Every structure is written in C-alpha cells, then in structure tokens.
Length: 249
Image (cartoon, rainbow, N blue to C red):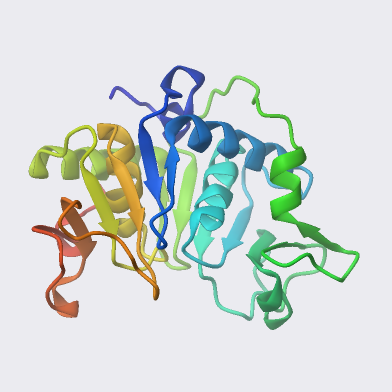
C-alpha cells in the first residue's frame, strides 16, 4: 500500500468487512470498525488536548489501547505505550489513557488529563474512553500530516511516521506478508519496533493484527507470524518476526 503517513492506513476507502484485528479472547473486528472507531477515538481525544507536539501515555495491550494510539496518531500526537508512573516532570505529556483502576498510580504534570477505560470512573475529572467512543462522530476531517511528525516514543527514542512506515515496509518485504495473513503481537507495545512489525506492517499488507495476552486464545494453526524476541523462546506460530530484524532509519 502506498502510504505516506500512518493515517493513510485508516482512510474511508479502506473500510470493508475483512477482519483487521483479533483480541486476546479471539473476538474479531473488521476494517470498517477499525477505521471508524479510530476516527471516533481521535475526535474524543481532541477534547483532552491531544494535538501535535504532545505525548499521550497509553496503558494496556488490548483493542482500546490500540484505538487510543490510532486516535492520537490522527491528531498528530505521539504515543508512549506503558509509560512510567512518575510523569510529573514530562513537560510535553498531555493525556494518560489507562484502565480506570490504574489511573491513580500515575503522577502527571499539572494540567494533564486522565482518560479511563473499562469500568466507569467515579472521579468527575476522569473522562470515560468507552462511553466517549460510542458517542463521538464517526468521521474525521481530512488530514495533511508531515511524514517527519513524531508518532511513537519509548522515552529515549522518538520515531516519525516516515520511519515507522519504512520499518513496516521492510517487514512486509522480508516476510512476504500478504492480505489476510495473521500477525500475533507477542512483544510489548512499549517497544516501537513491536508497533511497526505487529501493527503497522499488517495494516500495510491488509493483514490481521492479533493481540495476545495472559488469556491468549488465538489459534496458533491459523496465525502466520509472531512478533517477538528470540530471547523469549519458541512461539506457536510457524514464523517469527524477530524484533532485532526491525530497524528505523
């Protein structure tokens, strides 16, 4: 797919009923849902001040965490998966998206917003991500994002849309990843290489992102690739995309 920035992977023209995402319980979501709900996430997070130049912390590895990343991306913000709990001195940190029961564990900079998902929050200053998604407008204004815009950070390294897409294209070319191939994420999303190989590469190929977890019920015989480090040992999938093979220029 000829994408210049990651938002090009979530456009109206790409919505269809092909499976694009599978969660750790085996529940399937099609590309229509993935694109439309990502737009809703962007519209919702805009109310929390997400924009270019700010960082959004995202805690978790399920579909809602992924949607928070996509919504941040559409707003030209930078996602940091699983940030540390002490963020008070992070001047560009704007919003934390996390399970409601985890929000209190984080010390945020003055003015930063808390967005919870899962149970409905009791605190009036906490926004409820789940409710916001279903009430938001399922469309998004046309975008013109510069490829040099930052998209991901791990606190030490920040990568751009261009760098993530180039790394993902390298994965697609090296593996021969094709439409409907399933890629299981078995490495932490806090590593930008995991996002490039396990999320962006399948989107480029029109494949399927499979999110694993403690209650992983994915069928290893159906999955094609696993994104992981060789240090973790064997994986049930027939092919591995080793994180060490994923590089950013």
